Image (tube, helix red, strand yellow):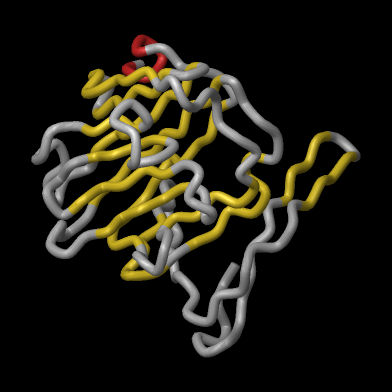
Length: 193
């Protein structure tokens, strides 16, 4: 789609077609500063201090799920690259120190997984996968397991509804490619492939 008016108001909907059947998702929240993505074989989404809402991404509780994507940022300074549930029930954060934190809550020590600082560096693409398998959450970076914790308070991934890239007034500052939400706990072999 070509943006004809850079000052216009836009929203996004996904269209799925199979034979004669067509399904259109709900429209996203409106945006007043559209992202302009150059045409080519591979399209990436670059968010420069902005947010994107994927409406109704997870509408039912999942005992197992995998959220994976490619991520690159030009600078980690002042970064608050948070993605997940707008109500705070599940989040993934890529911090200014290059640390990835993912989980249900940051109040209980076993309710979130946290990698070492420096796992993510600026100006490099990374494949990030967060796997939820019942009450265990595991973070993978470039196919390698970086951290895993088992919670006694949470299990699965709740019906969070919308999935937001750029949570809590902390917009994303980076590029995202190949974003996927799987309804299964992908193995290290699956992720590494």
